[in-house]
Amino acid sequence: MKALRLIVVVVALLVFPAVAQAAPRVSIFYYPWYGNPARDGSWEHWFAPGASTGDVASTYYPARGLYSSSNATVVRAQMREIAAAGVQEVVSSWWGWGSAEDVRLPMIVKEANAAGLAVAVHLEPYPGRTIDTVQADIDHLRTLGITRIFVYQPFDIAPADWAALRDREPGIELYAQTTLVGRAAKAGFDGVYTYDILLWGGDMYSRYCAQAHRVGLTCLPSVGPGYDATHATADLRIKPRRNGATYDAMWRSAIRSSADGVTITSYNEWHEGTQIEPARARLGGAAAAAGLQTYDGAYGRTGRAAQRAYLDRTSYWSDLFMRSRRMRPWQE
Image (cartoon, helix red, strand yellow):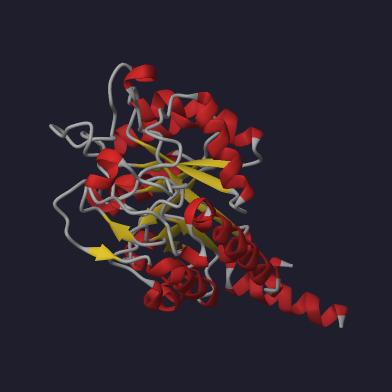
């Protein structure tokens, strides 16, 4: 039996080289871009331009209040919360050198590592992003120990440029936010992820991961609880949470798809209503008048018990995903 098992493992390694090398993990997209006058001198991201302070740019209101992402106490608590939910990696939104997200990144790395979390960055399409600036970005991020980079809208840069970059920057992992799997492979990416939980749902995960595996790419589909950006943008599209049923369905599909990892959209993208960070259970004053929502009803919880409903459910699904992947022969 041991000899047979060894043969199975060897064959799997030959057939799925990229998959075999990728340790399964659960990652979550994190936004360090919030600020308030007390900590940062002004509001950052909590309000749309020109909005009054009674009109928060979110369909929900954070249980922590309108916090600052430069507050180490807040970040420490968030990282511990994420780790307790069974997540292994924080993918921090990053908008280039000198941005608020860049200035806060060393603190995020410190607090995440202290909580037992790895840190990657979500390389956003900042103004002037080119393959040359990306190479400089990678060199900068290496100084913080970051070698896993998720690239949002990667094909604003030509695939040939990405392929050439791989030769100049060994030892990094690049993941493309795309469903164009063949294009990502030609560009030299290590894997693909979807991020957008509104456009891409669980019904395409199996096909997506099968395509990725055929060309030797790691498949990291994105799951999320829902989408509602109506309080922050002109986007009227909504993916309802259905009291947790939406989140469960996406997780279930990701596990069935033979995904190599799962990316969660998101921990705290409050503008788009994809967050699983605790939301305030009771709303009064301006928040109530603005028609903000709560997590009431999620997984049968109400009131304060509902605040952590999505975090606690993440713990359940993360554990189930990791156990399901340990059953795969090439992961043993």
